[in-house]
Length: 278
Image (cartoon, rainbow, N blue to C red):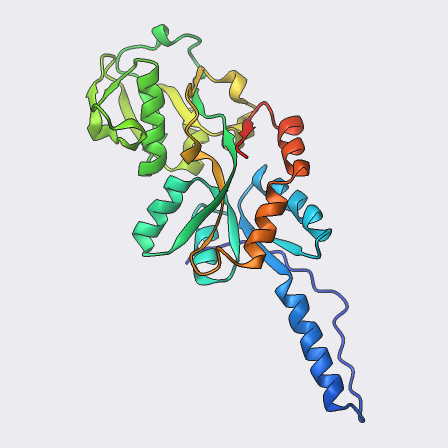
């Protein structure tokens, strides 16, 4: 069973009974309640800075009469489960290739609506300050899910540490490594646990996102090398469902998430770790 953390604030809940209420009063109250509910947009997200962006977008949306509610989850599956089941209107936690992987595995119909930012990803090393110093046979920690693994391998290929099957791009797996001159040993690790691999003995390189490596006090400028070519397919996206992608809720969410207020926040507060994608 997937676990997620949901913070629900309930305030001012009261029940008033009137002996002489009319049908008109009841109809008016019902309509009012329905209108209020229809202006609430529920967005599932996981961690900072994604959750920070959702909170900021909520302030922007208020001006147009929309109420964006953040539902914060604890893993990389719950937010998709919530959107797919209808418990959330949208999510903001993943890139399109990861979403497509979920769709394939769960026969879901999630849709990437709007890219918001590209994270500065790359490889970190606790022991080495230069690529040519990495010993033969070193361990390299890479993601175990195909979408992120392909990206990690493509970055290693950019640095000429490996060669991949021609044309595979960011879609490769370790089976597509055709040349490995340093005889690197692959440690395939869940994305959320890659930071722990950083301190493991014999691990020379660890792929990671700024959000996760930050727990070790590291940032992209500390990486041994970063991704050279930005691929917008890996931008962190607003994701919805096929059945609500054209709804007023999603249009309002997209407007708030791509506001100048959000862009200024990304550029001024997070320029060291990401690049706006809108």
